[in-house]
Image 1: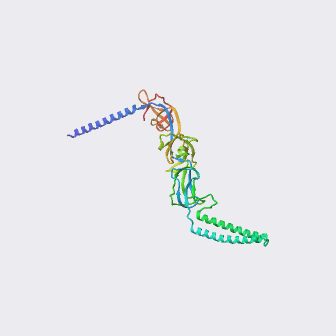
Image 2: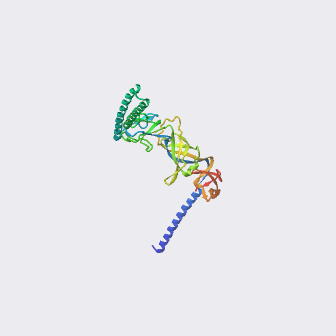
Image 3: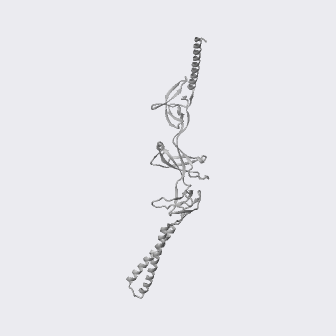
Length: 357
């Protein structure tokens, strides 16, 4: 093929490509130009979602007042207990040094007590016969009473060294429930060492008990959403394990102090959980849930797709298709948006052809 022929073929090829591209662009423009939608009247609302979980309003940790070895646990996880029911028994492991010291103290005070008793009995007979004076007898009697008190105290200290508690206290090696509810946890195994609760130590937790008849929703809310939550706000709560059951709740508490979590400031939030009285399904602690709050709502208002809004500086516009099938920019006033649809307050009617963007 000659050089001129090659140039001719190349020019024809370019013209075909340009023609195809022009046809495609014209088709796209025509299609896009003709795409529009009408505003429609509907209810629109803005929702706020808070993730969290269902927990009892009050959890009680049962701890021991004496140290030792956990000998036996009476209830099982999930059992219902009442106030005063036995939870566990603790075996006291006496300190050998303290035990020997207590035994020695008992022996010494017993000898002293027996000696003072003999002196008292002998001098009482002499006092009755008028041989000794009242002052001398009272002194002897005082020594006898002190010796007896020391002996009784030594026996009590020996009992404490063996048992870990005094007979005069309302404390035994049986640990009892201080509340009624369901046993949620038994974190300590039989045979484990138990530390008593005191001013310097929290003590070993033997059981966790909660009243599952009083449950709440506990979640976290972003700082930007806090101003939208009003006092006594009503939430719709969806429990993931019970999606078919309607649950509502009312705001109880928003933490006055936030904290950083993954670079975002969050606040703790709590709501009531209001269940139907006829509900027979057991609610378990730790169920995950999502609380929904309607922050804004408009009924029977004109709405359009939010993607059709054109934002320019502080103004909002849409493009209206006129009778000549040409787009005309028109200013509109918008209201509540749910992220998909937006309320149009002024600027459009139900007959307006809104160009799709």
